[in-house]
Structures are given as C-alpha cells and as structure tokens.
Length: 256
Image (tube, rainbow, N blue to C red; front, top):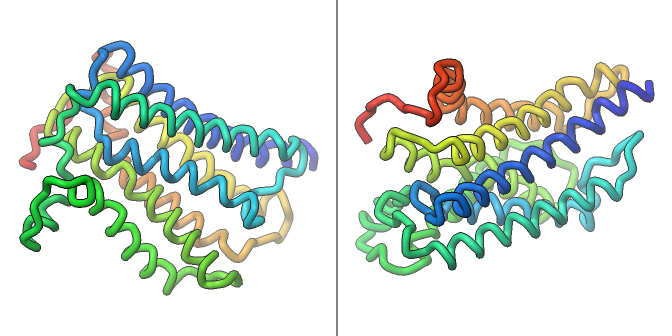
C-alpha cells in the first residue's frame, strides 16, 4: 500500500516539477537568445498567474494531502513555481520588451476591435484571455459538482479554465511562425507532461485506494483530458520533429 501511495504522491510532485521545468525552458530561451521573439506575453502571464492562484489552495484546504511524502515538499514546490514563474515573467517582459513581437501576440484582440475599442492599452491587449476565462469559468461552475461555497467553487473553476486556455496565445503565435525553437517547444511539452501526471493520478486513485471515488474525480479527468487534447496537435509535430532529428519543431502551413 505504501508503494502505491508513494506512486500517487510522486505523480503530483512530478506535475509540479514539470511546471517548474517549463518556466526554466522559457528562462533558458530568453537568456540564450537575449530576445523575447516568439514568446507570448499573454501565455507567460497566464501561466504565472495560475501558479500564484494555486497557492491559495493551501489556506482554502483544497490542496492534495500526500500519504507518504511530507506535505511541506508540495508547499515548497508551489512557492518555487509561483516565485520563479513571476520572476521569469517580470524579467522577460521588462528586460526583453523591445524584442517582443506584439503584432503576433494578438490572440483575442479581434474581439475588442469588433466592439470598436482600440487595442492600444494593456487592458485591451492582454485582457481578453482573462475575460474569456471568467465567462467560461462561470459556465463551468454551472455543470461542475461541488459541495463548497460559490466563491470557492468559482475560484476552482476560474483556476481550471485559466490553466486550460493559458497556452492558446502561445499556440496561436506558433501557427504564425511555423517554426518553433526547442526551448519554447519544451515549455509546451513540459506543461503537457504536468497535465499527464495529473490525469494519471486521477485515473489511478481508485486503483490505489480501493473503491474510493472522490466527487471531483470525473470532472478533473475530463478537464485534464481536454487540456491534453488542446495540445495534442502540437505534441504530434513535436515528437515527429524529434524522431527526424530536427533541431526545431516544424508546423504545417495552415492559413491563420
């Protein structure tokens, strides 16, 4: 029992480690190239914000409680992720702002343009993804089972949706460039690895704890499966490029 419980504990810790690695991949990219070219500030901000929001799971009593590994290890990983993610975001958006490809990082800006709002302020340039998340989170709240209060339930929904849509702007930029550097590709792949660890955790839970089915298991499995499906197209071309020995990920020529 201890071995199987350790397996579950390790999956959650592995998910956190993969996210930390994803931030390291972005940091390596900007330090190596001394440029923010190809990087979506929208995505970087969303991923960093999600890790900061995740810290609230501790005081709210929502965080996974390990059976074998010490709980402080998970708290430490969460703090490291939030702190390093915030540092990478601030460092990149300030030091390498002149090389930022703002015209390509335009996911969702057509929404404000159709409303007649100029896309010249930070709110209109970066606000769509959060507005989109807030609306989807409310719809998700209407179908998600929870015994918590509205505020706690909506917080969970907002966090889950933000994690799901965070990479949309980056994937949008990839489709414009068609060629993705190895570090930026690793950023996406490590994020996918984190979600895969979480999915395996929820799948394995009733196998480890016999006949134990948490109320949110089905919702979490559906959420993580959707997250991986969103990334599946990019993952296919990532592994194809790796098998061919290509130093970069080459994407097909779709019209964007």
